[in-house]
Length: 262
Image: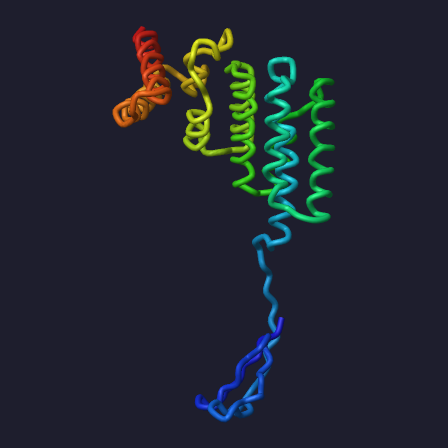
């Protein structure tokens, strides 16, 4: 790279356009040539992503996110129509902001990714760890959280909270190295708690984000944090579904506290 250094009369400085002085002055603003100038060559290595690279990595990360969403949808053994529609709607929302040939290219790539990942899932050949490693290598944190939110949307699409789907999402979040608190926030915003939506085996622990492998002390600490969170919400929410949800979570926390006393 080259940098130009110029010294001008402060009363007659020309306008600099793309590094070149514009010597077309006016009667009210006369300009003069540089009193002194020199050029310096130097090397500069930019370690971050350029704009084009960031866009390309984001697009690639989203294509891989489709694979994670398919894995969540197939965790219970089948791809429900509503789950497939949720993935397609997510694709359409992203593509809505893109125009021209780029839109058509990405649309084709997204659809091809969906078909490919679905075929792999049916054959039992989807590797969550491999997909997660590819996404991590792209280093697009926003897309990673977007992928987790898509996975939760897919889980909720068929109206059931399935323990296998919850477990799959947790494995994905762990593999991506995402902030547990942020993942829990997404989790809390997506789950529903009516009896009709709870699949057999959907435990209080899974709904509250408790890892069965944690020791008893860690489980109790987590319950204390969850109680404070949901109790604060209960006290600020008006009557309605969200307040009922908060109360349901507090009831579950109470049940687990009783269980963990022994």
